[in-house]
Image 1: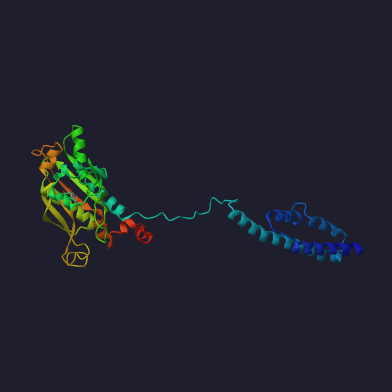
Image 2: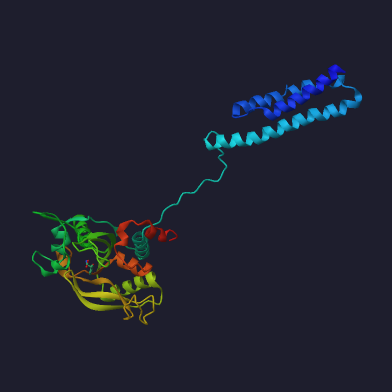
Length: 350
Ligand code: DAH
């Protein structure tokens, strides 16, 4: 009888032990597992004593041993989950099948969006996209474009000089690329056609305000071949306007002056906000000014060694910020260069 009570006492002790077992890390959890749940666990030994228990108490004995086992299993599974989580947090246990945490990809700058769109439009028309230097000499930025020294038109573009003798400057427009491209053509011994588009940064010594900035971007287009006419230019501009602002858009050309084109014009598009009825964007005129264009002045062609009797061409130059301002209804040109995330984030979905 004594021996049998001892067996029951032992089981009760084990139950207390399971309850009180101090498990505070993965190592002590493993000790606990080996003692109570391992292949040679102590409960197996205790259970083997059942043969000495009288029949009428065998069931009770079995139940008590089982209760210890169940409690041990319960504690083990709870703590195992807890320690597993800790290990994962420490990076010890990496689940490569888990979906990754996505990081914000950032947004494209509105000027980049406009640049890309314009590039696509002219690539479809078989134009070649070219680049030119932002630091330029006087010849490519001014003189070759019909603006020799002391020409009053130079005053239209207040210039940042890097050095004055010889004059090196930050280009005031992308029209320098016209000269670069024609120079390269001459050097390679080739003749027109020339069909290029250039997009890039330009600089002017302007006081910064909501409407003007000392740095901005332009698109420049140049097409030279035999028999290129003003009508070709007009059709290209109409196509551009409709691609940018929709099929219903129309254009108008107003006489203007540029030293490198003759005749010269200013292009307006019908207001794409009000459809020409008049609104705040078009200042109730129904038209929005986009930029300058014209037939390449024969002087410019001759400056670059192109026979102006044989070849004609057209060119235009527009401000990209202006196109973006109208397209995305931006009211301050300074926003383009301030890198304010609240502004830039608005273009995330585009
Ligand atoms: N370069 C001129 C400017 O920045 C814009 C321009 C006008 C470019 C007429 C052209 C053109 O190619 O034909 O104000």
